[in-house]
Image (tube, rainbow over all chains, first blue to last red; front, top):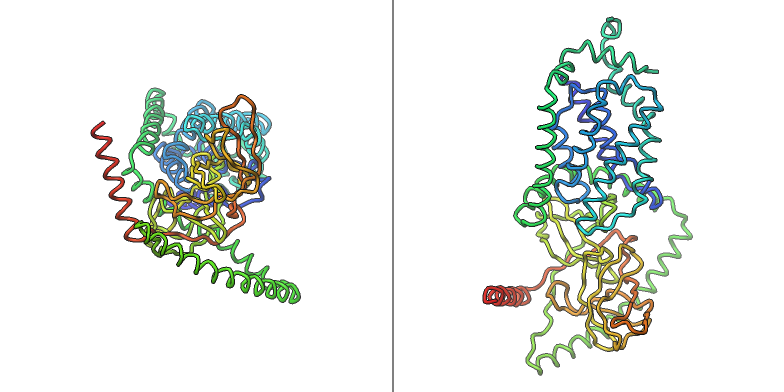
Length: 164
Length: 310
């Protein structure tokens, strides 16, 4: 279990780094929501490591690192993960195309929550960020799932895979 | 390649994963609802209570190493690029910089004498003279922040004496103000953010106004200027010193265009900022001198007293 949490911590650190790494201005709106994708992956594929306290802490750190209002990303993440909860058991069994469709839905929920909160706080967020960020998320999801799968499952002992 | 059914087998035979599914639906819904309410309360507290910024500062302490980790490779890349630049380009840059330095030094001599004369004139008028202000150089970390706001992150924080509301300048003019301070880093709200307002004065006519951001780093706007204002393209706008936030006399922007619509009470003025808001790495943090701080404190005390009377 400790090894799992260490890997989770490393993965999360990497997601935070990818969130703030500087990119050319035209790629800024095409940046995927790395932390959201990571939490969705953990919720669907590693639900033993998933709990709300973990999400709250991640959301708090995301708010700090992006200099946003405290609670903004927590709200958006919780709302999105709650909408993803009914799909939790069967998501891993779905085909890649259906998974991409659902990731697109969850991404839209996440982006709209952030947009509404920012508009309520009189912060300007262009509407096209919803579509562009969702496009980036659904494009990256298959590769993300594969790489995360290699990282989180490749170290398991062989006999686990042999068990029926 | 990992097939999703294999992952599912692994999950089903792990008893710890089955625990989550044993939780009743009601417990899960209560958990999510409470978390959402917590998030909303957190947003409310952060916006309305200044003392909540202590928690934000503590969180920033944990994320500061990540910001530095992103910044160092960018700085390393810049350093390596500078190392492999052609010798001819370096010699040309050197000559140009020396020429600029000579021109600036001669202008500085003129400005010093004008400053001295200004100080004498103010003494004659029995007003306080501009005392020297303390400054500190800071570096902008190469970190992308929130899309919705115009922020940059500096590598100076509470340990360096940075405080909320502190003005930030660059070599050419006003950049913004500090809105959040952590122990190691701080956040600067740029003047191009719609929530940033700078009290300005037209250097040519002396007319005062408020400059606000438009989310565009190349265009700012002067608001509520009456249609009878004497302002033209090319006018230099400097800080007026009103509000006692920005020191007086620092360049902010140059008027790009003035649009007068017949029948409208106010005119639309677009201003291009003088500071290099997106192309800068070094900035200057300014501390007001003791006299200025005392005066600001007395003014704020008076305003509070008047508010209580009302």
